[in-house]
Structures are given as C-alpha cells and as structure tokens.
Length: 147
Image (cartoon, rainbow, N blue to C red; front, side):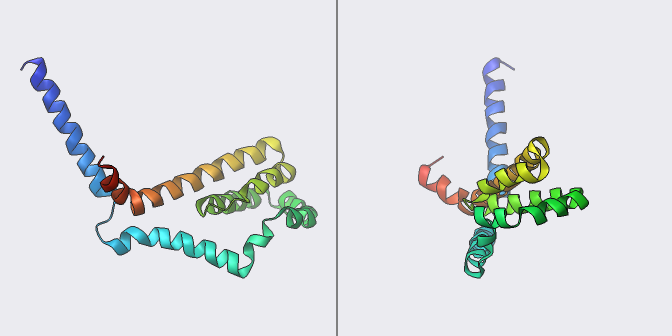
C-alpha cells in the first residue's frame, strides 16, 4: 500500500463515521425531531403564563433570602441539587434571568460552592439545549448550508 491509498481509506472512514453520526443525531420522523424543541417552548410558555418566572426575580430573591439561607443550612445537599436542577432547566429554556440565580447562589451557598454549582447547572443546561437544537434543527441547517 502506498501513502495515497492509506489517505483515501482514512478519508472514506471519516466520511462513513460522519454519515453514521448524522443518522444517529437526527430522528427520522418530524414529530420525533421537533418534539424536544416543542417541549422546551411549552415549558417556557407554561412558566411565563403561570407566573413561575416571577419567582426568579431580584425582588423575589431578596424577599426570600432568609428562608432560602435557613433551608440550605438544614439541607445543604438537597439545596445544592435543587439549585443545579433549577439552574439547568432555566438555562435549557433560555431564560435570561438565570444570571440572578448566579448571584443568589453566592449569597446562599458561598462563593466557591455556589460558583461550582452554577458551573455544573449551566453546563448541563447548555448541553441540553445544544442537543435539542442539534436534533431538531441540525438537519435543516445542514441542508441549508450544504455542509
């Protein structure tokens, strides 16, 4: 085998892996492709209509800071897990007020613990919304750009 045939074979392997990745990343049925995006939009709509997003405001956090601090003192692990889950959900639905929770985490959990929990929640939320966008819109964007 010469060097050129090895390069061609490697290129063919890369193309085959890319095709497999494309097949795995986008479900074939439009309902399955767009369902996660619809769920995210529905969750954001429900949170907005029911007023749940009002609880993630600076005034709400100031009003409830003592109760939050007391809860965390008695239930540190539960408080951290709950914070990470809530933060990840807010990031996943692209709620702009999630940054207020970052500040609140510093006050409630302390800078290092709150910062670490924020990074974990933000990473989980960003990975979730990325995967939803890739699954729902990836095939369409790939067709439009030709890549």
